[in-house]
Image (cartoon, one colour):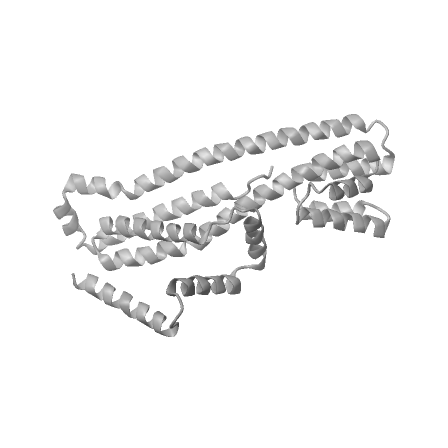
Length: 300
């Protein structure tokens, strides 16, 4: 009871200090604004670009969704940690720690969405360049046709325009292909560029069959990638369920020992270290799974 009183007093004190410093301003809006300021100050520039694209795609979480995520993490960690230690202060520490994980999960999610978007754009780029070449019989003209068609979005659209400018400036497509290969490290991009380099240097005679085979390879790659996404999503759901069950295994221990015997065990410092270890290891296990699920999406 004393612990609960201490926590409530501390919470009220923090609230009063924040409110007094921001008289007349909604405290909730103030917290949101301050969080945004921290993000703008410390988030890597590359991630800011990724997140802006995710917002543009309409897949960024709303403020309400982030608030629900914070509440869910705080409540879940509080319940689990209290079942482990029956200690309010420890539960509060785990609540805070669980909330600090959310930015990392946001980073993983945004990176996955951006990676999926880039892969789809690469697919559009390679497929449409091959289709345009059938009409123009010129790689640079094909690039111009793809840009003018409006099927590409930034950043790929801007990069293709850079390729075109480099080709006209240098009088050759070599530097353009090298630039794109480094920017988008997909084997389908490199193979298509190598094929067009060969066609440009040796002539386009009998290139139709090679380009047709390349288009079939792209279709097969896309099919495999989308199948992999479905498999990952299925694995991810089962993985999270398994991880949550592991957290709640302590309930089984308490059922076997009895609540009173379990609480008595908590007086042993080594038992507490063991329980902390179980929570931390399982959390690392879950975060590693999240990292696997969200990274390398859309690559070969």
